[in-house]
Amino acid sequence: MLHKSLSRISWKAILQPWQELDWLLFLLPIGLTCFGGIAIRSAELHLGTTIWWQHWITGGIGVILTLILARWRYENLMQWRWIIYIVTNLVLLSVIFIGTTANGAQSWITIGNFNLQPSEFAKVAMIITLAAVLHEQGAKSLPMVGKTLAIVAVPWILILLQPDLGTSLVFGAITLGMLYWGNANPGWLILLIAPIASAILFSVFLPGWFAWVALMVLIAWRTLPWPLTSSFTVAVINLIAGGLGDFVWDHVLKAYQRDRLTLFLDPDKDPLGGGYHLIQSRIAIGAGKLFGRGLNQGTQTQLNFIPEQHTDFIFSAIGEEFGFVGCMITLLVFWLICLRLVMIAQNAKDNFGSLLAIGVLSMIVFQVFINISMTIGLAPVTGIPLPWLSYGRSALLTNFIALGIVESVNNYRHRLKF
Image (cartoon, rainbow, N blue to C red; front, side, top):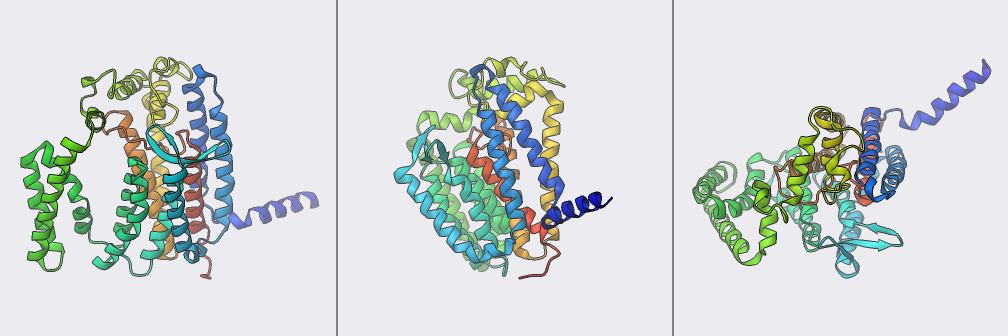
């Protein structure tokens, strides 16, 4: 009896620092990581590689980091926000000079046998910095929105220069999500992305561009100070964006770059080139039908029809071998993770913690949406991995670090402020 009592007491003492941990949010990503290793092994079975073990080992390190961060008070990050920001920018800058090039992007720093991708860790650094900036005043005023955009601009430009379009888009999603949660006027957020839409519509559908600009002018009139001046300025900016977009499309982008952005609409235009990934991915997912062909039984997966299937196209392997049911279960798990992140954001004891959770939510939602859309032919190939499932050690560690910070927000939500 005494032995049992001591055992209960010791376990209680051990788990006490994590007593407020969101165990569902903690266990679901671990499940995805384990499942990801199984899918990666199947996708690489014909090559006989052991990168699926590396995925699990990296995931194990990530779990340890999550538990450490969950026990560490997240409020301490406030003191380190500018140091984190400066160090992140310096590391991103160093990539330009000493980085290793792979797949057309100079995004990695080689340390021994490990290729470190600083742009992945920069996502968490940016979430921390923006949460610290927005937690007191929010984004209710245009000067605060401008300050936020100026802070994001430096690492965003450094990442775009690598060039890493996928990560730069994730930065945009994080920024918009945190500005929205910081009470920025939704009209302002629409105006922020308006030039991008104008650049696309001007070249693709001119009548749609005129309608879009008219809508932006109306939003500017209703939401910005000095309505007449603001509306005129917004119209000019969108006109310039449309002209620049047309110029870049015709004179700057090479043919293969234009194809990469548009072939998802009709990949059969270049079935052996830029459209190959998309065609084979859709075939694989469709071949899985309801319950899939079975583990290690997918023809597209086992015969290596889909390049980079262990990274960006891991969802196509899941679709072929586990079918529609496997895909829906995967999406359900991601939905539950996002639901827990929203609940933690709502129940956080301060704005800083709430903004941290929303930043992580924005990062996960955008990456899941774009990656899966890419594999089923609804978005261009952008090189964005599927969280916890795709192979990529830097990305996997980043996701677990982000998870640890959010768990800290939940773990200390009832405790006294420091």
